[in-house]
Image (cartoon, rainbow, N blue to C red; front, side, top):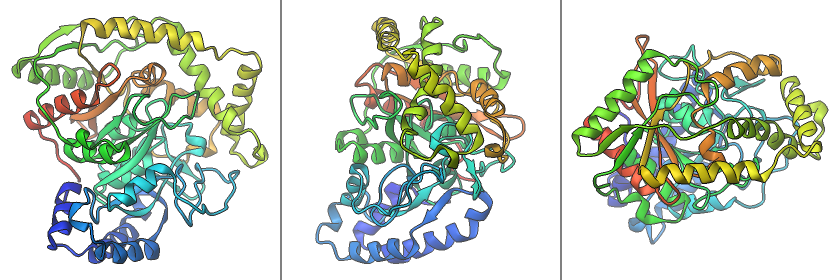
Length: 438
């Protein structure tokens, strides 16, 4: 069994594990496995080993929360000597001369930056592929690892690294985490914003255990208390399997996983009730508009001829929406007010993480925008509303389909509720342990 980040850091701090040997072993494992799972766009083999050598002589080694832990970073963050490609050949390939804030925090905590993980172009899609590779689900390689943090999810689920950084604009951490049987945390907008897609995106963590995900989030947010998992107390937990906007049917196995999770939480003294937020029509449509307009804003100034055909179409529609001034702040404000009213009566919302089975692993970048949009709409409706509201949300594994695909459930809380969600997730993990890696 692959060690957790907490186990690795403990062993490095105590001197039982040499960080250089660990990093060399990690690099070798990626070289052997990445051709199958497609998790990494680039691996910093020599640079990571050099960082591990420097780490071994740090005077504060015994105090570092991520001492020697190999961490994968999503290909949207600047790492000195590398460039964030955002999955696109249209982006400048100029190596960064300094680290992004989240990378600086990882290094300060003792993490070894192993490489940059695969994303779909401009992080638009819940399938992470491009001309140089396809991120596959390590549990079922015929299926996508999800997106847009699909490479990060594949890297952790395959046991290549114990934890990985991701960003979440409309479910981009939670969707791949659920698909790959991981814990994925999207914090609230006030904790760790990434500022993309009309301020809907946030940095977050992916891991095989709740404790590891909490530890990584605590480092990214510079908030050590998040790593301390407490007792959530007795909570009012609302349960809903109603798909926003369409009210489409979801797979029976997803409903069973939600019910099982609710029953486990009831056994721990929580009050469980059926209740659904007033999703309405405006908020889901507002999310859809921002999904097009956000990448269009990001694509300003790049050579759009270098974008993939599906992305060019996506950006073209997004530009039209922006010109028509259809992305209005009132949509967010009205939805947030309804969400706040819902959480005045409930402490946590429990939903499925996905609304459909994940797409197969294919070269989606060679297909049209419409062909990509259909599976995106089907799989993701439970996630994006909480980006629009800016509320924290996380996913944890809750079962398997008959074919062995992981099933995830989503937990949501009001702003400031990250610690509460982590504590509830830890209760589910203790009551219903999941296999960590294939």
